[in-house]
Image (cartoon, rainbow over all chains, first blue to last red; front, side, top):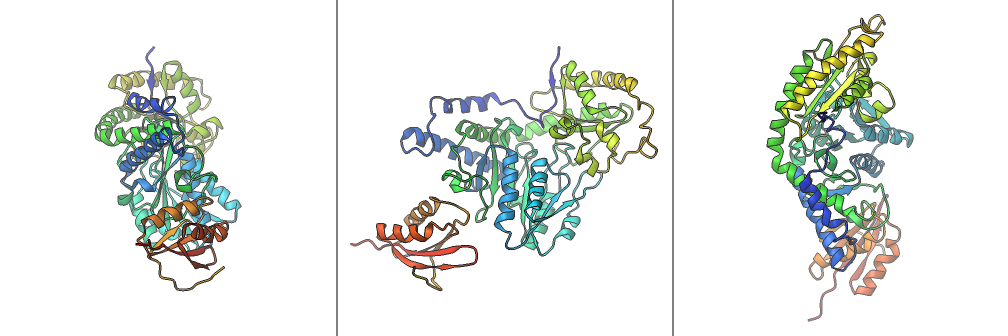
Length: 399
Length: 85
């Protein structure tokens, strides 16, 4: 049976070249980077080389990169680290409703600590209006955190505009670029961000490797205390192979980005065109201003989970909403915040493409998906509508 | 402890929120970069620095000029020793 992996937002396979770069650091060069003898210095040099590679991907200085164990850790670190470091200046933090749980739950944690958090609304495409950001700023605001791009609906946010507003008001600005970095051009100077999170496995690097860019001269309270690793800002013996892998993956992403984007867009547009021709399916997120490899939809009258299972039985792997909302069988908070009804949000399905996908994969999906939907709709008690007056057929997203 | 005011530092390093032993590592690193006789200012909120920085200066022969305190952190001033010719 054909196997088509369309869930690259969940994770990517490791690039073989990344694997080869990592291999010597498991057994041969296993030293602790803090050790003074040659095994240690080899590991230390490898980490510093990776730091330069990651910095080059986002146009920062290498000293501005702090390695973490995940994108989620980088997000937690940014939010808590900056809010706490600046709490004497104010206790107001602004995030959007589009954020990943690692931002939303960090914000909720800050609320418990006595901070006031504004959760900004978004429009039907999931876009945060820079003007709304501006209006939400108070004298107490010390930090704004807005995602660069949503892994759930693919929408790319107006980070540059928000960055200008934050800078004008002297407020620290963080962006969660986990879905963006390595997949679209990301330049911290051009964006005007003070902090930026990323994760290696989103661009063919290993899992368990992430990074937080912290603009030079910024104070941040560490999340993990201990030794002097990462310049005293993130303790713990470094995951050397993973960091080396992140560096290599960043280098490859930078060098191959133009081609990867071109290939992804071609396949994505074909996918969107094909899927949109099925009845009662709506594209979610912005039609143009979206990640090049991202196609997300809501399908009327059926559940996303059921679609995933039937598609998986045909060797097609996709996602429904974000991983956590999918497991918790909840409607995606991101879709709800975009004004999608909770019934329709249940029928969320997300296809995210990668370098391994081909036109034949898309053809295969387009031949199988209509049958899956047809079968599920035949079984669905809601086949002729959701049954709740006012919600049937209502849709605020772009068809 | 010797308290000082209005010391003009040549180089400032901010290690607020960083714990032991960053105060000593950064101190050593930054002093190395300074020219003889130049003054380093270290900003830190680490209490251990109150003992360690004057102690380090005594041990290494650099001059501890004193410190000042803000609401959130301490500032330590160290003059790099001038090598005997």
